Length: 86
Image (cartoon, rainbow, N blue to C red; front, side, top):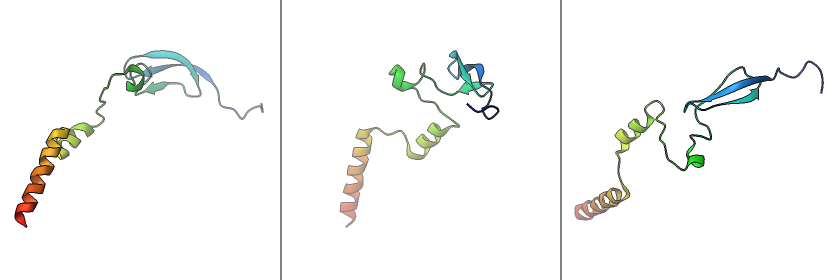
């Protein structure tokens, strides 16, 4: 390895938004994470919605919270209305 071209490597404590902490090494002095293996749905098997900046509320307000059955009924009603209008 060449001298003087590599960044300093520090022992740091990584912190997740869920509260989990662990020791690791990094070139940064602090590590703050939004999601880790303790709270990620892939590893835990539980679905957890992280609403960042109200995105979920904006989506449901714009498109509404519909189930698959409600969408099918709305499509049938729209087809029926279009057929009557012809």
